[in-house]
Length: 387
Image (tube, rainbow, N blue to C red):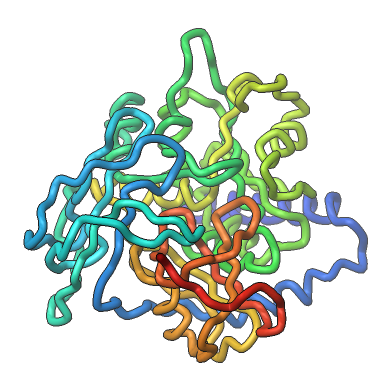
């Protein structure tokens, strides 16, 4: 009987989503087929570990993390290697089992340098995640959830890259009734968002429940782009029938003003100038943030890998790659078959504008979800060097 009720609940959610999708579609002659065809063939593969991983101590707005390891120290995969320096900061975790080679300057994708932990990977290690402990999420208090999100090192990338736990703390007198999840997945690399929607329903459900639990909110709305229904349909089918949240297709541009646009589109409320979404009784979190909360908090583990889409010109093996954080960008491209000596690349973040990668020796960081390889004649000087 319960299975039949759950099946009816999932079917109802799918029908409601399809009705909303049809209502919000720009026209019957949508280019949905072309977009789905471009992303559906992308398989998800696990990238091998590079010989050395580089973990920058600053990967978000706020204070950089402080190293808690020393040169020559052995670490296991998932172990904390840098602690948060205050509230506006997150810790870093070892993305692989190995030994700390040094703590010092490293290239960053924007072409500048910063302090980082350089980890030499043990090639013979099993690379199991050997750090963490089971936790029952439903027993956590709001304050414990905030601490757990910070301890996991999760950042949120909607309008800007910020420590995710800072969005779960309210000022005195504030109240939140709605958590909005940004699952728009900017084109052309919406494959990572589609992958999360299609394969991580349990994590999304758990993460959104934790966000609601932390903020005392009554409802969660998962905003997906009109027309991009493959991942959303899969999620609608898998979400629990009792879930206190729903999917909403919207026609909203994913840019620096995405939070304001989503709040207005889904609630009709306007965020006052200079204020955050909390002023409209809403909190906006990225879909990757929610999925990471649901995956990491029940295990007390840290954020150590991303699913990265690699696409563009002269990419023999385009697709999705589960990639350890700290992996050099050029290593990722070589694994995807890119042979161009000095490829020109745009970096895709979980949300926000694409930025040129000025150094391909730079590592993958917490917010990066895609690499777009440009044609060789796209302009700019092709060299990617760190000095």
